[in-house]
Every structure is written in C-alpha cells, then in structure tokens.
Image 1 (cartoon, one colour):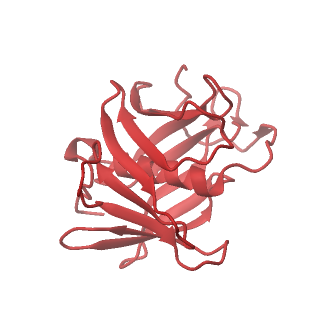
Image 2: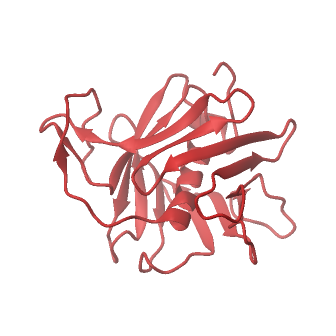
Length: 212
C-alpha cells in the first residue's frame, strides 16, 4: 500500500509493516480491557471497561498511553446488522461519525463491512475468525489485506501464546489507532471461544512479548 490511510492521526501511521502486541487484560475482571505495545515494548494504546467481560458495552473509548481519548465508538440501536459508529476523540453533540462497522447481512456468520466516511469514502471487509485470532481486513477495491490479526508465538519457548495475547499486523501507512478501534468492536461482536491451552508450533520470527 503506497498511500497512507489516516483516520485518527498521521502519527499513528507507521512507514513500514508493523506488528503490535495486543494484551487482553484482567485488572478487575477477566478480559476487562486491552493494552497495546509497540515494537519496543512501550504502551501505545489502552482500553479499560471496568466491568465483567460478559456485560455488553454500548460505548467503547480507545485511549493513548496517557489516557487521552482517541476514539469514541458507539453501538447503534436498534440494529439487526450490529452497527457501530466511530468518532474522533470525545464525541461532541451533532458530531458526525468518521467510520462505521456492521454485518453485511443479518446472518450471524456473514462478513463485516467497514465504511470510512470522507472524501473519498473507503470500504473494507473483515473476514475470518476474531475469536480464534485469525482474521484479515481487506481493501474492498483492491482486495489486498491491510490489517491482520493472528496468534503470537513466544520465540524463547517456541510456544503459541493464549488468545489473550495476539498480534495486530499493519501494512505500511495504515492508521494503527483506527485498526485497534476495530479490534474493540470485534471483541464485542465475537468475544472469545472456550479457552484453549498453549501449544508448541514451528519456529517463526516474532517479537518477544513485552513485560506487563
């Protein structure tokens, strides 16, 4: 991808392909938030829900490491297509959404469509299984993958980590804050399947998990 895709801020667009580590946290309740680390183990984004994982959330707020609101994401009700809308920063009255995400049909296993509202408008499709940490977001015009979510491997032990730690892989120039905002929505729509045990895998080059 040659051109930057800036949705939240240009500073969140990396010039080369980047793998961020996403950690689903359990501070007060199991799965009550997310922390996102950059390649150097520094916190880039965070999300705190302060409630049980099973409780449906109608408002999601993505923050930077200092707690500044980057995105406010609201569940649209009622909606058979599970529509969510994203707003830059803290949503103000009459503010228009910058993007929306919904199912392509009311069928549960249908793909998800992401529409970016701007000039020009852009559309992406999310395919695969977020619950199993194996999905991609494709540019609707080129069908090229721009974001990929996949399991993370600890290179020191050659073991695939549990689903509470995974990789958010971004093509060069793609807005990482926007991508993480979509992860928050996917987590609300799909959640997690039953926990599975860590398993050994073939050697692969990944970044070591940063300290919590």
